[in-house]
Image 1 (cartoon, rainbow, N blue to C red):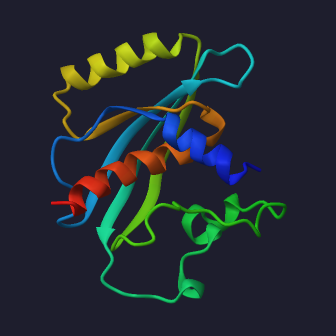
Image 2: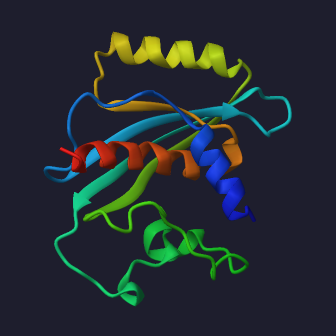
Length: 162
């Protein structure tokens, strides 16, 4: 388990390479991302995580005990009895009137270095003329959700400071 200071270090050291080029909070939105980091898997150089985060305005105020549970987000078949009591979620959005859910997760372990994979990803997005996908470099791929939180928090900060 990471300490608060370790999570803060990952948060601060996360590099946001590419952001979507339009606002996301005006309505329901799907925010695609590619997160890259050095792999902790033997025989691989890079861990690549692709996914989509659904961001929507929070219209209903709910008490904390009515928030979704881990198994509601990931499905009952993905709940390990050893971790069923742990809390999952994005921590940085307490004061923002939005709700975030992470879906469509794809994790790959690649032999090429982060720099080469980054070049490939940026080339791919440019060829596809994709202006909606963010690209993030995490300092620790085991804790990529902390880097995703930084990515989303940066976008939310810009959206709400207008």
